[in-house]
Length: 334
Image (cartoon, rainbow, N blue to C red; front, side, top):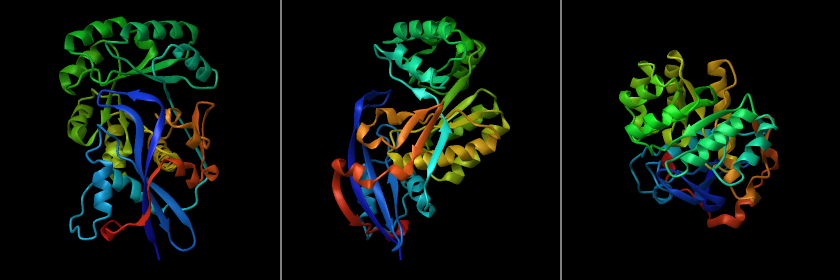
């Protein structure tokens, strides 16, 4: 008989990570332990502050309320616990871009990864770091013929500022531009396409419908999906089938998952590869931001993220445990 237990964790990042919604110093996660008497498996529920519709406190309260009569659609629960059927886990890998913050040693870091087989690099640019970012992109583009940059703008530019930026970019080295403006609409995407750049939308529950509409108008070249923001796998795969029909590429993006959650993401990324019948360059490198004590099973090598799950131990997370193991009281989720 299955017995589901949970514990909570607060895991520090090696360096602060800043985006349009939040400055991250740590990640919150609930780990679910599924003990069926023969094997023990672990699953991760880790909503992303600033993006998820639910918080870690809301999830914990929901899982521990045996009197709750409602089945609440929390995407991070739907995605995390949908994998309860998974059992044997092994070495797994997928092609990935590398996400690197703009720091004083950015050029050296990118050179190191490039020589190790990586060709796509995601850089977050804003008005405050634009001058430095463009200079680095220009220098590295001259140095490495096959290098490509994914520019994540976090909606930091208004319409007029966008036009100025687009004129300064060399399209041959820019793989795509993600969220150039805060508002996702036909006008803002059209101006990117007009300047011969490819567009990318970061998918959320709140923008699924408008993204589908813009895909049908052939204004979206790429879509980034953080699965725990969307929920059930079949919904994600159905969306990808629509995107493929209009020649829009979808890639799976990680968001500071532990080896438990990352394994789930890599499995899904391989299903995406099968849909497109070729390996997609996903965005699965956020492990480089995690505390090094839990990333020993993860390796960025030869253009891929490699996860040796067999080397992972739940004890790796023990220093970051906030609440000890307790049985889930809300049996409706099982």
